[in-house]
Length: 373
Image 1 (tube, rainbow, N blue to C red):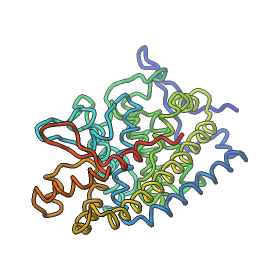
Image 2: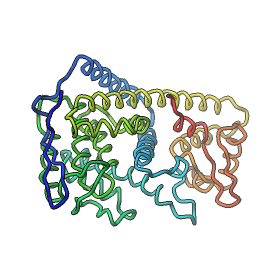
Image 3: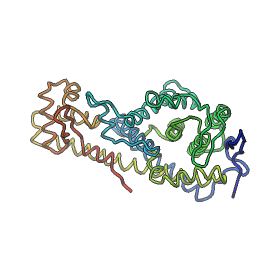
Image 4: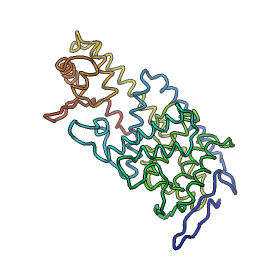
């Protein structure tokens, strides 16, 4: 099956591709038996993930970790590489945060800013929300990208020359209408369609991939399919990066929305399964360590402080003595003593720095970094 998904407009020597508004037409999106089966499995995986996430004692802690994980993966697809340690460490006293780490941190801020507009200010998922996210993502890191504003020039993305800049406001308005309109497409399918349309429009000079993948998470949260942003679709997109771009391009070239949606639903399912396993193991680790603190003679006479320390290092798995001292309201020496006990128990590991010593909660970091497949 082949469908026409847009048209080319010639401006000078440049031929721009202009996508037709969603949903797919001539013919409409075909929900085959295999696609319907996969859709049910992906929906089920989302529901299963919501169930385990809702029973977590400190949901915000896990949300932050997963947003950082998605930020790392989504950024790495664009060639922006940093580490989980760098992100959790952020600024080491006199050292400046690297541009790569700042971009990843900005991704988490962009998601927060967009979610705040949707959940706190009750805005629909509009172009204003996406432009706010883009401004937050690239402010102070890429002034050439004109943060928060649509591009004003032509760009090339592989073999694609996206629409002329003058067409972007109209095309984004059409996409906004599709996202918020009542139609026959299930929210999970709509999020996949919206992502490929956003990437085809390519409305910004930079950051389109990251904002486009963030759009998926925002749509899943807004539609209540996801109770919190605790999946990272970039996990599967990065693992199958070549196929990811081929499927996106296939929509433009042959109108293969069905192939893209099958790939996208598989990515959502795998991301949910990955998150479920990771949360399960993190939950087991926390219970195990709570029990260890309760019975280990090393923590005799300081069990209450040790439990509070454990709670804190799950929130900040890279810490200093000073940070712990402020959090616990304990003296520097008392905080150093408790961290020494944790180190002797193999729960944390000291960095090799002579100054600005940091302690890494390695068992937890290992689970966040673990690759299951």
